[in-house]
Image (cartoon, rainbow over all chains, first blue to last red; front, top):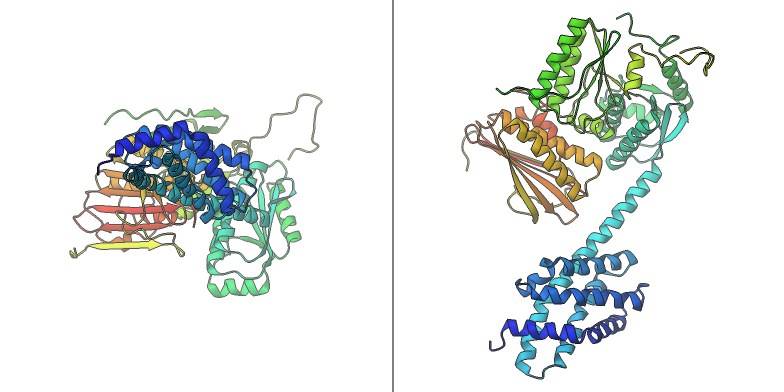
Length: 292
Length: 136
Length: 162
């Protein structure tokens, strides 16, 4: 090849330095034209993104990294692409639109180089180089976008779970978690984590898990309930389970799950009464254990 | 064998109760040294209760769990009741998932409650300032 | 290799994230650091390193504790039963999210009866006998390669998203 990569890089760097305004304008225009954004990212914001990415490209090209490694190996450039993609993900753009937007920069760059040279071979070499350089950016953008969305989904489902499993303070040093609906492993895990944290925060001595609103319990869930009770005990508090429906009591018996070591009560009110008794339990003087 | 590192948690004596704690940086040798020192003190001082603050432990693996369980058993044989206080929530969850329930080990939410269970009460109110009626 | 006594046990939670092969192939590894497990000080150092890696990967405090505890169990096994070995921390990326993989190797006598070793309460050393089985419960994926006289390799992974 008569046009060396070094020459192409130099050419591109010059275009980026001298025609940065022009490239940014064109890139922003192309993105607006694509009209794929479907978001409320303003033209000013697009322009800002474009400026920071173009600024980062120049030092990126100075590195020795091969074309397809430039974007991933230069921290500033990597950051610019990641930042842009995350912003799109948060504002609700589609992943396709996001990576297309990044890829549109190719056209803007090539146009700028075209203004410098008409030599077909040179242009071809430049086009190939730009492709190698920015295809990676498109892929990185897509990947980042997907990760960003997942992060959002994860946070939302976490919030939803926390909303559906509130820990309430019923009495001085008595907490309760009323569980409603279907219990699965993920939810019982959250219940356990929230409950233990609340016990520590409130210095609670008794935790009541009320399952009046729970329709079914399987072995896995029963096991998790047992684990929760054990974890509460390890922390130094007591646990009462209330509101076991007759059908669930039967299931538990049929599954052969041993809940005999767990304090259970028919209703939340009974459980609260039991809890208060537990707190006042040690009796006047509170010095049980002296007789050991 | 090199000298065991100091465990770094002094064993304090409050009446007939010994108060101590475990640090996160507990290696096996330190754990053994700790057990030995504590049991020696129980026996020498005729302690009736032992409070071990574990609120600084960021993890409890099966080795530390075994140390705690053995300590409890040995102390009981020596006539002292052990209370382990202040286990962090993530540690409790992990222990339960490991399948370790620390059978026989008494726990308390924090050192204050552990001490209360061992028969210690809050300091007496200053003269004339009784906030609560009957003492619990 | 199908030597007599060569045994492998793999377990995975229902709904696994990605396929993880047996630790060498499968999902991309973004960072990898190997620590020696030769002394008791190493056990502490390994714990610190694993803790730092769990923070870096983005685990919550409970998951951090699970992974560090599992690492502590596995490293202790390698130290006590395997006469020392190594623990490699790999940050991995699966289709559903990031993860941390622990590869614990020793050149010890190996585990003659793996099924029994994975049973709670079974121990040949100082511990509760919950080491291997317990560590398996704390991780999402868990593979053991071992056999009498050929050392032991445990590969255990936990994912941020399950």
